[in-house]
Length: 194
Ligand SMILES: [Ca+2]
Image 1: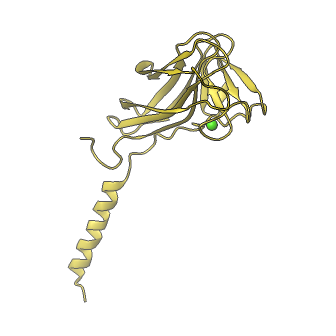
Image 2: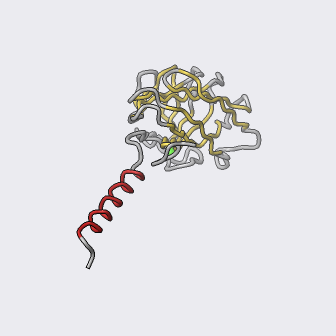
Image 3: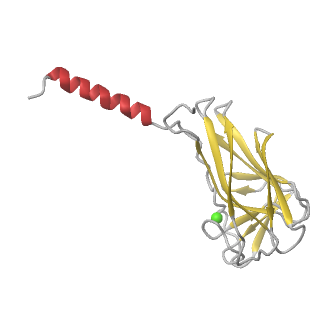
């Protein structure tokens, strides 16, 4: 029969293990797949600066939210062209990034609007207004039924409890980069990054 001391030690070990594997709180992106609001089936909805897409806000010019069937998506039925009629569109979302000095990884699917030039679409990811990554996607040979989504990622270390994440097109033609399936998670969950 185990002694009380041994039971206590085991319980302590379990408690320590639980603390060790608990991920940092927060960092969940809401509506990372741009499934809200519901855009017209087979078409798209143009959203101007100030408009909401769930937890996202259009923060520059306008963007086009594609509805089910408009073109291939990486997740769900909808995806976001970061350029509407004006070009250089952007969306932002505030995410919980506690505790500060936590390393986070942003993952997303990137393609480009194949219906108009230029062939190469460019995109900037910003954290609290500072660029943390520039990306490009070549739409040559792509079509609405073969978008060719590529997984991309960028990392940042939080400096505040709440961080503003922004996806901004740097293309400027009205046929921009298309993003979908945005996810943010601690880079080293439960551990200090090496
Ligand atoms: Ca989606």
